[in-house]
Length: 303
Image (cartoon, rainbow, N blue to C red; front, side):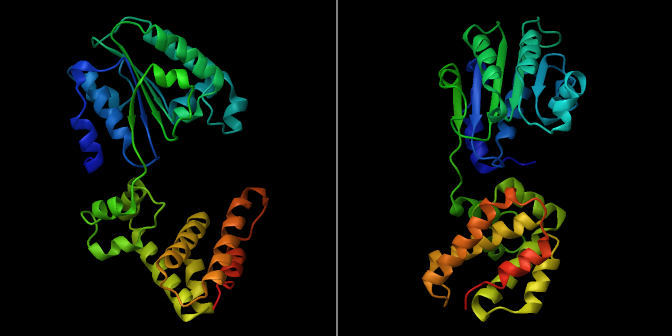
């Protein structure tokens, strides 16, 4: 995959010959942080055939902690955790990783511990990792990727080089999207909350067309009034319920901010607040008829 422009800029500033022993790559999920992580890993493990070994997660000098290896860990040591689908990274897994990087390299001159999704580290895991960060083995690099800002022990940050990504502005997202969309005007369909990774996925699998249809239907409902046929068409779109809800809220916020709707601002604001409250309380609903719920919510669009 071609790097995003903001990733290229970060990579160009990295000197592989003068790296900190530990790095935190931190920012919003879906902005391409893993591309930097892969650049660092490939650069530090640069021997012949290393890239294929890295790709297959079989390089003898690389220990990866990610969603896949976490499942493998729980299959070995705690199947109850696996059944509960926990995302937390336990201290036992970190101790295994530390034991690994204490060994001498087998193929490369360097050893790497890569932690993907470090926001899921438990307090005990962070404490165990901190001890190694304070006295790292020679020729060892610890690469930590986090999807949340400042979510780790502050002392961990003090021991690491930080590569930080601010959330993309919508203008930045639009500028990037113009280069990958067949029609540049379609960039207006992209909601403010959507990440470049998600946009790319939608374009690749053809789902972006459904998003365009959803935008057209919502434009009709908010400007021409409630229409049962249009609501039915929205319900039938092959888009996840939560994604539809998020998009409807973002669409309403957008027209409210731009002042492009004839709906009274107070009534529009009340509708947005009602939708937002519903979204916040979704986790408390045990069973939900999504089609009925979506129909009920859309019928409440103010005239």
